[in-house]
Image 1: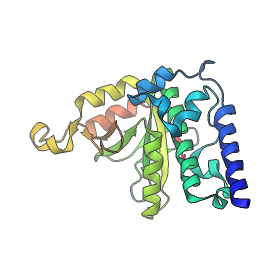
Image 2: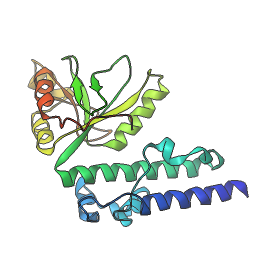
Image 3: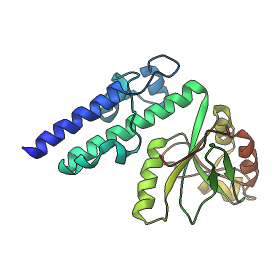
Image 4: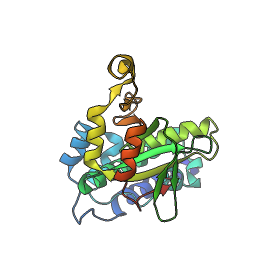
Length: 230
């Protein structure tokens, strides 16, 4: 029937997008060992990532779940829609993480809207940070950024969007080594000068930067890499 036909067509189109679009990073295929390293486990058995892992360099030309899925998704059963959406998000996350790994960089993501805007990114991709209060950033997980964006959209945050930019990979390690858990702030960082580990159950490498780290970060940003939106 129409629903089954639409489902097959979307599965086929999504599979082709993941398997055939995109280009090699540095002209080489993705290695499963690298994917395993990034996620800290054997990813070959992750059902929603198999298309990206087995597809090698043929990844996503599509960006974000809305554009990737298209209006035809409304004809598909909710369970199928969820599988397709999760698969595309996960594949996109793998693509972003591997690009960072091979470039020795980390993409920083932040979800913000009009009330909590801290990042100003111009048409040239230059990034400017405003304010000096704790700045919460996601160091490397596009999947988490997309999930958090949806959460903020559901909460009606005005003009909610993902903003991103690139930093050298070693700077994340510096932040990681300094960071303290929220429960340990009173004992280990009473002056609140060290980065704070944020929402570790949702994703690794989410930190709240204090004023001194914000100033450091301004000089670590790869200007021209900034992006507004997914």
